Length: 138
Length: 138
Length: 138
Length: 138
Image 1 (cartoon, chains in turn green, orange, yellow, red):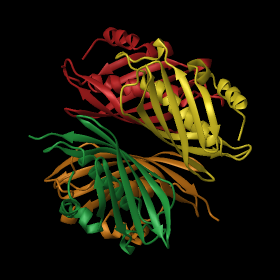
Image 2 (tube, rainbow over the protein chains, first blue to last red):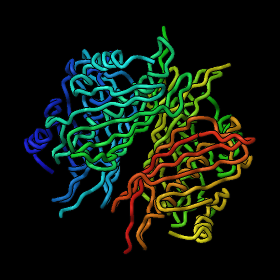
Image 3 (cartoon, rainbow over the protein chains, first blue to last red):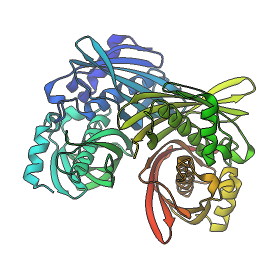
Image 4 (tube, each protein chain N blue to C red):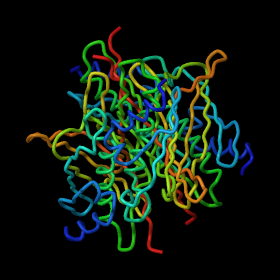
């Protein structure tokens, strides 16, 4: 398990995550929580947050949860993901909570929930199911 | 069916699509092709394009293909998507080609293929399968 | 909400569910639990329960959970499903627990967890994420 | 690549596939075609073939296509699958055609299309996208 400062540095090392301003809030064994401030440039024509932004947040948080249970030198890389868009994502912020369902030697299964934070309300807007491949040390 | 100029304007009306620079190349009945110039800010820590960018391109192109078969006043909105990440996405550009598998009254099923263009080579890097919900005129 | 006897009759009305011997254990608002006795004819070459049997159990239980929140005369029919196969399914029985994530006017999102029961142990072996389309009264 | 007789024997070695009567029609490098005669016991309450039967056919055919590109001693096992149910499956028979999208050292991505054969018509009723894990020789 890694310190939150170390996790923050790792998030900033991923240019697209830094570009969107996704920040880790907490990280544990097989868990990760993140947040993002919604910006006008992140929207779809309809005014809701674009599915691509929601997927980025959900996928990267699931990846961080998976990474938290990797042995030293191994990296977990998303092989496939499915996102269910339950409700329109609107508000000031998005919060994401990911958990590892099963960590195997070569595959990790993880899930994320994405919540929209709007005026004090917290609404589940999307759920991700992902499979990650473990790439071992060379 | 709509003129490509009209389609370009629609793409620019989606702030996140304009932000990433996704451009439509062609649009037909149940089909759409798009392209994106890879920028350093779009990458993952590993140097490949972040899965969130690939998903955005694949999803928005599938949405445009679905929209091309909607009756006037109806909008197709992604209900769920699955992305298979076949190979690392690297190169100068990403190209995407989407096709509608089935357009029903309330649901549209569509698929996208994403290719990485690198030094003359064109490599299939991801495949998307999506379900879109049709929202009728009020 | 319907009585368990009524739910049992509905399960027996679905020939493939009767053929596999899937039985409802409980049913509530947006929830359903079912069970199945593993038979030798249900196996894959490897000796584990075939993914098709696990999917049938997970999908039908999710459908029953969705049906429990339908207005009279409406039917929820699976539009797409994703199954993650976390561990080999082996043992005497499979148990399934499904829950509705979001019930809308035209779409229902539901999830199922499948457990293998073997010699007193209960192991999570699969997780389903499904989208169901609501078909209204004629 | 294996002879069709050998493939038939392998299909019969999977009890659930033998139980449903799924038969291989052809098999090549990264491809497999199968068929199944629809029986009354395979139906859903609505009279269409149960999604679980369609999934079994699509998954097993994708698995056979993946297996056709495995090195000796390696087995491809489904890690996750997604099935889109485009249209109700009705008729005399179901036919399935699977193809490998990408065969890697540890993961194989494959797709299947399922067609309903009814009175001379052949209708695309479902599409599967699956990820298979390669289990090497001990």
